Image (cartoon, rainbow, N blue to C red; front, side, top):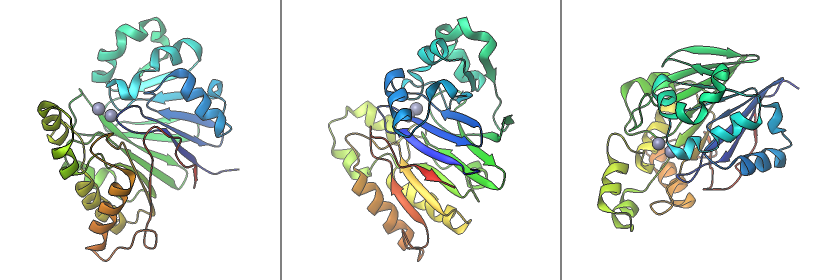
Length: 264
Ligand SMILES: [Zn+2]
Ligand SMILES: [Zn+2]
């Protein structure tokens, strides 16, 4: 069956990993959870962790990479990441250097049946990227850990059928939550995370560019809820006469829970 399968295994500031397969190719984007939990989540969508071909990393922060040393140890899997990400992680995975591949920003690489293209994302980790994945005529984009909506994002992500988009925090909830001041400053700064309001603004651009489905993800634990993210983004879309779940399928990947399986 030539369907692209997409499933956020985990999403949120406490751990991120997305499974994608097409024909005989299986990859993860990020692996920021325990090896055991990734294996169990894959089993629950009837996927075998030992069949993974590659892991693509967006950046080195632990909520995206914590299982990497165990994944490299127990699986015959390749890891692909930018130079800045690999420099940070290399001491933990140097025993597996024959399976480590550096990719540059804006480089396009083929992994069997998938083509994967990285693009620059502003965030406070060296050489952070998002990914576009192409499977024949199908296309998916993954964009999380976004400090601000840099100009390149408007062109790099436009036109993808499915977009996994960060909707990290509500500005008021962030202001009033118990996080220390320096953390609040980091989250709303240019190296931090995308607010629900800005996710709505970007979602409007995506829908106008032809995107059919948007999954909101990487929600903050204290400064957001699934309902708040969904309603804020829906309200911003409505300002441009776009109706959520009529003109675009809109859903939320709940924090710490297995997400939906999307088949394209
Ligand atoms: Zn993150
Ligand atoms: Zn990060």
